[in-house]
Every structure is written in structure tokens, then in C-alpha cells.
Image (cartoon, rainbow, N blue to C red):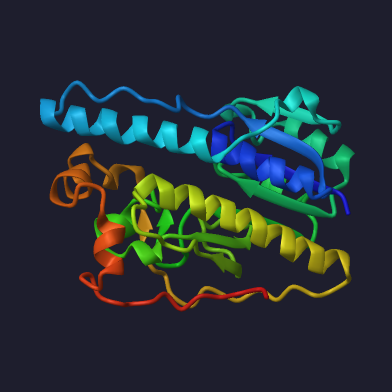
Length: 265
């Protein structure tokens, strides 16, 4: 099996790459250089929201560095192509895909791939989406389940790569186990770890010749855009709940609605 991973440059992206590499599946890698991992708060917001903004992204940085220990890419014995966002659909990437002849393509944490690239991909071409589709599609989709006080709806979706954003047929939903004391970033990190394990298990099935079933998305769900998220939404997470929404859920104070998950095994 020749697996090409197209992923971002943040710690969670590198972790997925490391897991695939350690499992012996990763044959080649394209890394898109993503935006600054620790952004600065907008000047236009009130001071209290700036403090929440700084806290939120600082704690995300701390959580990801705790959770994801990754070797330097220079130590990996596979071909690696590094690109900027405008190059993602370029002839450079197109030539790379053609030359590496992958049997499986996985994308995770990159900007939208155009049809000129998608058309080159093999039968098994999937995206890892950081949210449960179809209910949480688009951007910031590990945040919104907490905002809506449904932390058990935090998870990841492996789905077919198509031009429709997070809309391809679903292969598998991954959800992490929630524990007392988990904050929003702890759950996000757990979700990444769980989908990495699940993806390796699915690839093992393919390597044994098993067919992987995909399920059409029957609901449009909700597509969240980057414009939907505002710094003042953090007040719910940190002021109303002090980042202990999981504890409230586990205590039975936030209901027991469960997502109807699709599983590959």
C-alpha cells in the first residue's frame, strides 16, 4: 500500500502523520504551512474578551504540545513536499501526486483541494474532518459542541474527498471517551488520538483485502463558517462554565442526546 497524506503543519496534523508513519502505512507526505498557531486577539474587541482569547489559544497550544510528541520530519525516511496555501492546487502538487502513485490518499487540516487534484486520486481518497458530519461541518467544529453544551458530540469524521466541503460519503465517526476534568482542548486532543487509532485499523482492513463501506450523508446538518465564530463566544466556555462543561455533562446536567454514529468496524 502506498499512502499519501496531505496535511497541515500544526501539532495535531503532525501527530496523525506520525501515527501513520509508525504503523508502516505512510509512503509520502505533503505539508501545507498553516496560519500562526498562537494568534493575537483582534484590536476591536473588549479587554475581557481579549483575555479570554489569549487564554483559549494559549491553553490550546499547551494541550497540543502535551498530547502530541512528534519526531522531526527530517528524521523520516519518506519523500516530503512542503507547500504554502496558494500552492496546494498547483502543478507542483499535481506532479507530486502523479509521481508518487498512491493507492490511498488522506487529507487532514489543509485548505480545499480543487478538482484538478482530486481527479488524480485513487478509489480510497478520504478526508479527516475535525467534527462530526453532517451535524458539525465547516470550521471550528470541535468548538461548537461545547458552546451548545453537547460535549459528547465532539469527534472526527473520515469521509470521501469531494469538492463539497465535509460533504462526502462517511466512512467512520471517531469519538473520544470523556473524563472528569477534561477541558475543551483536552477533548479535541483525545479526538485526534482516537481518529488516528481508528484510521490505522481501517487501513489494516484494506491491507487484508477487506472492502470499506461508505454511507451517504442524508442530512445537510450545519455548515459553520469562519465568520460564525466570534471571541465573545468564549464567555460561555470560560465564564459561564469555567471550562468544566464535560463535568456538567458527566453529572447528567446537560441531557443525554447521543449522535447516531457510523462505524467502519
